[in-house]
Length: 345
Image 1: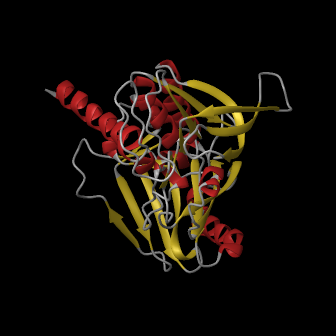
Image 2: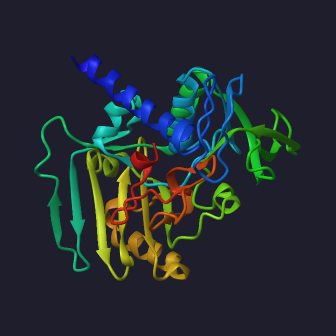
């Protein structure tokens, strides 16, 4: 019964994406009678060949889109990612439902958080998560591990990976193929080789600074800046965060968001974010470091410093012609928490 449910769920996801992209919104009809054109840039023709799909961006949204296209019949999917070992700055928290729905193996989850503390400016602590059942948790992941797994799975299923930076998307003929111009980085080469390729469908999964979004004039959105330090702390301090995450509130750490300490495999992620006062992000980060200093110990080692924009709302246009935006490129993020991986994927 459980297997049947998973297969049914996957079939529903696959059918939904393919029907949305390949049939209605995109107006393409493969190996059948031409369908009427109803959207700008739609094509009505019998191609007589596999549909060429480009997925720009190899994060969770791009990797999952590539996986679905790779599983579909009569589709050739190319997955562009500028850096295959890319590690996007991210708190890394995922909801429990994502583990089963996307068939993630247990080792993808570094920590299973079952306790959460909300800490006020005065230091008052409120325990959150008491309603969690014994088998429920919030999964803490490292993006370099999660993203690589999803990308590799898509490639194993048939998606063609290209290590390349997409620089331009051209739509010279609304009824013809779209052109992607990019720099391809081959193993051992520091300088990219100028390249280009034609595609019938493009999925823009290239993040908050999406070039694909700019190409289709998708419109702008307001955004937060998230700043995070990955910090190695002593084992006895790490034990405290074994299944615990902390959220700090107060104008000192963020005037409109929250700060956090999230446990990872062998370190913690300490960070904050803001929309209304982005230039002061370094001050807010210094404040959260001060607030949690005792819990990190006397000699915390900063392993990595990360910063990244987080969309505050969806872009005005997310499907134009045969181009669709997903993930951060589209603005699919939960505004109150900044969580976007589940909606991206």
